[in-house]
Length: 355
Ligand SMILES: *Cc1c(COP(=O)(O)O)cnc(C)c1O
Image (cartoon, rainbow, N blue to C red; front, side, top):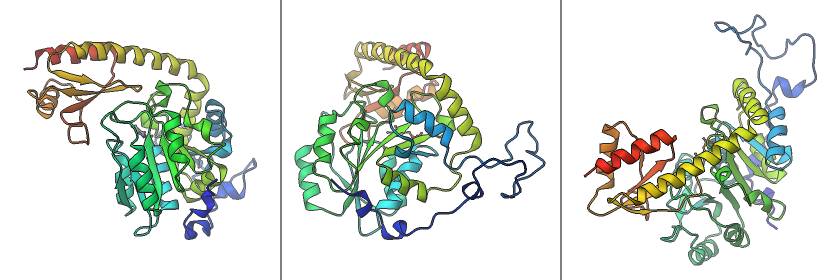
């Protein structure tokens, strides 16, 4: 088994993390004069936000641990999953020394985060069916031991397909770095999360978010789930108060009382996706609607229709989709988020009118 502590950059391993007022005293007291907060309360709003929030988000983690069937020690909670991705780069990749592996077409943030951290990116594209290219992966990983971080997105954005756990395990069986499996859309699938592999692979990190199925994108709550020693490293590098008090409170409220509602919303969005998929197939300009396990569809248009021109035309009609036509294997493709029944209907009506 890979020991992730062997992969942590030495200066991070040696880091003495910031010790906040709430770290040095975590009991309860009558009078708090330790954190230079404003004793008179919050100014300008009726509510009380004058105390620093829990730096370890313990209440929230307790709830998340039970939802994802892991221990709180397996959980890093970040200001969006973007924060978790950035911290993985900072803890495990040194510029000019280590590289990251991505499999396009995929989520753009991996490459951006690599760029911010000055880490070279190696690309092993998915096959034209958007599956892992095992032969190329095997060759690339064997030839380049400096690859420290690899990203698999499942269901993949922008293609929507799920990557089977057995496929993911094939990569884990030969990769000596940290494998990140981004399951931002996994709640739309519901079974066989990569978290079930955590006991077997210490170098696996699974990303989740409250931005999609939970409908809490504005709260900025993203998770990294992994072996306790990896999570400890991320917690050491994060800013002490990375999750605001209002975000923690609202997320806890949603997670405590909203699980059934979330499942209902997922069921409705999945029904809407099937409806949209069928309707799109009946539109003459559409060439392919790719099967999706998420709340969006990747749609390829026929050569006589230019997807970018169609994208602009839809925008003029007040309907905004995502032009993905510049991405690998996605020529002439738009990515369409599943909306409400009304919104989906409107989109289909406009597409019928386009020529
Ligand atoms: C939307 C999305 C996320 C979520 O990012 P947040 O920062 O948590 O909002 C993560 N990964 C992928 C692939 C996504 O599409």
